[in-house]
Image (tube, rainbow, N blue to C red; front, side, top):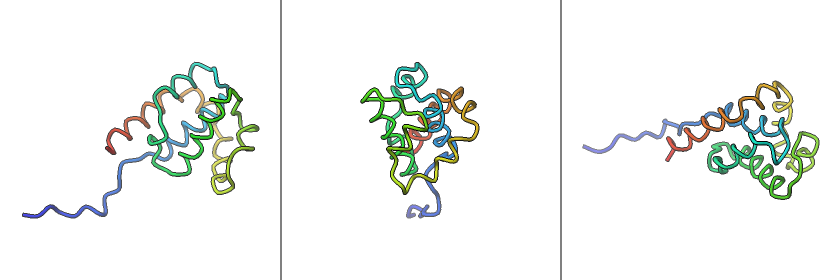
Length: 116
């Protein structure tokens, strides 16, 4: 018996949670914040299924490595035009995202593990 083809099944992902993580990090915007540090110790760019969100995550990592703030004002200067559509999303419910960034980071990590 041959294996059934499962081309219609998509890998598990949670774009809304990935977006909340990026938005939460940006809402905090300070490299030495404990929530930011905890999230960055666990997350890698392959935790993000959406290509555009990987780009945004890598920009945050770069700004942290340069010890620069990555609040929305500084962040906008570094993003390419093709991912700027997410900026409006980050402005909504910023406080909620910042408060839950550690929990959301754990969820994104879970999806990464399931995809492997």
